[in-house]
Amino acid sequence: MSFSSSTLHLTVRGAAEASAWYCQAFGATELPGPVVPGGRLIHVEVRIGPLTLMLADEFPEMESFGPQHFGGTYGAVYLRTDDVDGAWQRAVGAGATVVRPLGDAFWGEREGQLLDPFGHRWGLTQRLRDVPFTELQELTTEAFAGLTA
Picture 1 (cartoon, rainbow, N blue to C red):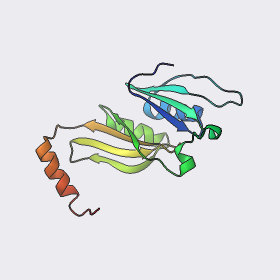
Picture 2: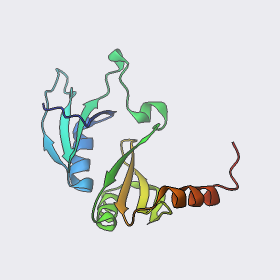
Picture 3: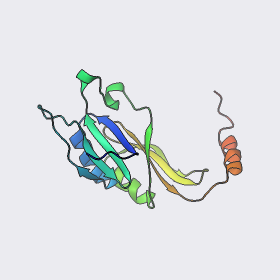
Picture 4: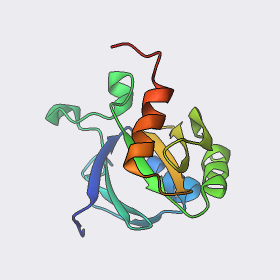
C-alpha cells in the first residue's frame, strides 16, 4: 500500500469488479490488497496515470457504503488526458453511462461526464486552450445568464 498526496479512497459495491472495470475502461493498473474473511477487500490500489485510487468494498457494519447505497454520488473524479476521445470511447465501450456528452467547453477543455457501473461519476477532459480569467468570467456569465438560484 502506497498512499500519495493525491490518493482518493472510494467505497464501491464490488471492489474487485470495480478494479477490473477501471483497468479495462481507463487503462488502470492494479496492486492487489488484503482480503478479510468472507472475501471483502479492505482496499485495492488502482493507478490511472498519476492518480492513485484506493477501492474498498462496502462495510455496512462500519457505516462504509458506496454510492449505489445512497442512490447516487455527490461529486466526480476528473481525469485529464491527451486523448480524451479515445479514453471516452474506451470507457463507454466498457459500459459507462453518459451523464454529459463529450464536447468542447467554453472554459477551454474538451470534456464530458460518465457514470461507472459502480455509481461513481467520472469527468474526462483534455486541455484545448488556456482561457484568460476575464474572458472566462464573460463566457461564464453568458452561459449561465438564464440560471436563477
